[in-house]
Image (cartoon, rainbow, N blue to C red):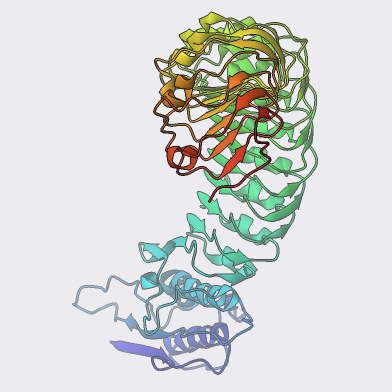
Length: 561
C-alpha cells in the first residue's frame, strides 16, 4: 500500500504565491503519483488525450492573505487482491486510466469546498476587515461569527463588527451559506450581483451600512430567501420586478433609501410575505392591484413617499393585517368601506394625504384598533363620527386639521382606555364636556386652535393628565383654583389665547405642581399678582408666560432656574 502525503506551507506562515495556484499544484502532484510516475508530463485518458484538471477559482486579494493550508492529505491505493478490508475512501487502481482521471475529482469533492471557503473567507476578511478573524486558529469554522454545518460555512453573522470596505464578488463561492448578516457596519460600494449565486440563502441582512447603487435583480434568483433587509443605506434605482420570484420571502425591509419608480406589480406574487416596510423613499405611482393577494401580511408601512391614487378595495382581503401606515403620501379619494374588514388591525395611520369624503361608518368594526391617525386630510368636515367612539380599545386618537365641526360628544367617555387625544386645528365649538376629564388613563389632551367656549372641569380623575393644551380657543371662564391642585402630574399646561378671567392664583389653596415644567397663560384677561411662593409650589418650572393679561405688575416671558 502506497501512501502519499502532501503538505503545503508550514503553520502560521503566509504564501509567497496565490493559494489557488498551490492547490492546483497539489492536485497535479497527486494525480501524477497515482498514475505510477510512468508519465510525469500529463495524465492520459484511455483514448490517449490529456486529462484536463479544473483549477480552483483564482483570487487576487488586495492585501496579503492569511494562512490557507492543505495538510496531512493521505490517498491510499490498495491491491485488488489484498485480504484487508477496503478503505472508506474509493480504491484507485494504478493501471486504470478511468480511475486515474477521477482521482483529482475525488480530492476536489472531499476537500475542495472547504479549501474554497477558507480562501473566500480570507478574501472577505482582507476586503472588509473587522474583529472576526481569530489569530492562530487554523479552522475557520471557529472564527468569530462564522458557523459551520457538516464542515461547511452556513452562517456568517458579523453585525456591528466594525466592518468597512466593499463586499468582494468571490463571496458567491460560499455555496452552502444560508444566513449572511453584515448589518450595522460601514460597508460601502454596491451590492455585488454575484450574491444571486448563493442559491441556499435564507436570510440576507445588509441594513445600516452605506451601500449605494441599485438593488441587484439577481437577488430574485434566491428562491429560498425568507428575509431581505437592506434598509438604511443609500440605494437608488427601482425595486426589481424579479423579486416577485421570492415566493418564500416573509420579511422585506427597504426603508430609508433613495428608491424611485413604482412598487412593481410582481410584489403580489410574494404569497408568504408578512412584513413590508418601504418608508422614506421616493417611490411614485399607485398601490399595485395584486397587493390584495398578500394574504399573510401583518405589517405594511409605505409612508413618506410620493404614492398617489386611491386605496385599492382589495385591501379588505388582508384580514391578518395588524398595522397599516400610508401616511405622508399623495393618496386621494374616499377611504374605502372595505377597510372595515381589517378586524385584526391595531394601528391605522393615514396622516397627511389628500383623502376626501367622510370617515367610513365601517371603521367601527375595527374592534382591536388601539391607534387611529387621520390627521391633515381634506375630509368634508362634519361632526366627530360616533362610530369611532365605539372603539373601546382605542388608546390614541388623532383627528387634527380635518375640518371637524360641532361639539365634542359626551359618548367620548366610552373610550375608557384612551391615553392621547388630539383634535387641533378644527372648528369644534360649544362646551368641553366634563366626561373627557373622567377618562382614567388620559395623559395628553390637545385641543389647540378650535372655537371652544366653555370648559366643564371634572376634578375626580383629572390627576392623570400630563399635557393639557386648550390654547387659541374662545373659552371665557374662571380658572378654578382646585384645578392646579388636582393636576399634580402635569408637566405642561397651555391656556393661552383665550378669555380666562379672574385672579390668577388663590394661594389659600395648597398648590403643589411639583412636576410642572411649562406654564403658559398669556393673552387672557387674568388679574392679580403672582404670589412670591410660586417657585416653591412649582420647583421644576423652567418656562412661565403670563404676558398680555391684566396683572398689576406686568410680566413678560420669564425663565426660572
